[in-house]
Image (cartoon, rainbow, N blue to C red):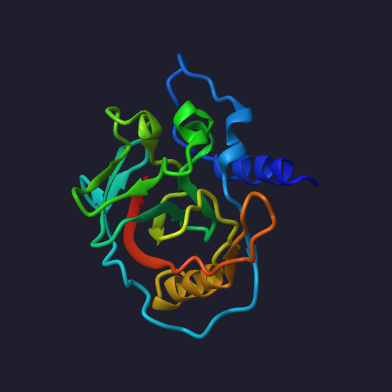
Length: 212
């Protein structure tokens, strides 16, 4: 499968239960050409899990009903490229930002589209930002899960991580599992000529509970 074909399959899976974009702007799959893919490599030695001082907050709060619209506020002490993941009550991992809609916009063809800086917190969704102008709506399954923010100093817009084993949910091992798997990844350049690089992740987590 070509890199673009693999990307399309990964992005399609990430958009299951994804927020709905405005009908006036349809996704253009061709714009996903700028996405950087990560490939598995051997795990590096463990180290500090948040060197950039990354933080993520769920608004209006960590407990919300099915159908509620959710916003995220993300901040960091260092600039970097943001990935936002959801681990739902079944352990399924879904990339919420960037997603197919945002990456298919003209801004999505720019490697810096998901770059955040310490200057001010980043809100997602944000209708003032075309790259983040969509809605997140809480969908099944109800129950406890968490959002994971990943920040890399290297340009990256998509990750491929396994689901979290359900028996780990609700324990610190769930976050540890995600950290370990993410640390096994290496950034692969689009030209496939540069050596795979350590993304240098920072991690931040926000637990949530969806009520029926």
